[in-house]
Amino acid sequence: MPAVFDAFWRAVLYCLYPRVILLSLLPVAGAAALAFTLGQLFWAPAVDGLGAWLESSATLTVMWSWLEAVGLPRLKAVLPHVILLVALTPAVVLVSLGAVSLVMAPALVRMVARRRFPQLQMQQSVPWWHGVLWTLWSITLALVAMVLSLPMWLVPPLILVVPPMIWGWLTYRVLAFDALAQHATVDERRTLMAQHKYPLLGMGVVVGMMGTGPSLIWSTGLMTIAMAPLLLPVSIWLYVMVFSFACLWFIHFCLLALQTLRTHAAAPSTPPAAPVPDTLSADLPHTLDT
View 1 (tube, one colour):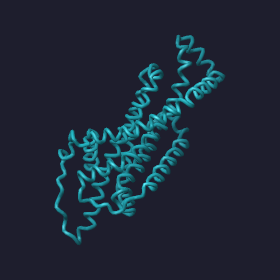
View 2: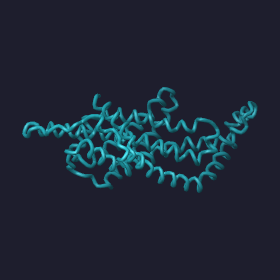
View 3: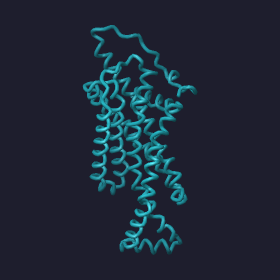
View 4: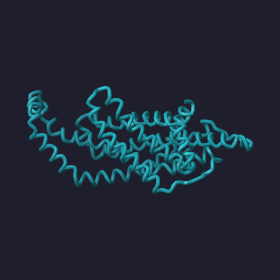
């Protein structure tokens, strides 16, 4: 547990680096451009189709009458927008996680390794396409789990447990792999992910709970619906920063675990290497570190 908390605070400090903040803008630009294009093409038809379906639903007729009776007739027109935003939130989360994994993770690993683990050798770098397949396969499994677990969401206590567990498992699978891809061999990666399975899963669950924070931006009032084109890039950037922090958290934890594993493996035959200064003050951001 001390290693988990140590990696947590180091990740917080690294998020203040100008380089990390600049890197976080790259996936935001791409995701925002994609979201804007898809919104221009499909948003209006989707809202009209969903609104027509809600209007024709006999089950909801009583609710429409009640809304008009209490003086909230406009809520009927806003409801399709709200439903679509809620439905698209998981897609935004997955796109943000995938963007951090594919765009930011390699650069963040190199930065942490250079500053904190300069003596840690790259034993086997995983091909980029291997990481892409791992990420896509993990996302696919998470989506299947989400669909299969939907009936469980109707039970009030389980809705607070099941989604964070699924997001936590996905985050653990993707970011632990990315953290070790450039330095660990296949056997080392499998060993570490098995040895530290529960701490890594716990870290993933914490990140999954943190990932609900940016969603609150849509719950501040009906005005957010009108400001959706502006708030969507902000929401994506918040998700990217959450996963950037998570990526740094996993990198610090996993690279330290890898260094410890190699030290223990080499201890019987070789003398220990000179210790590298390892203090939180060494990780404080510098204004010129871009």
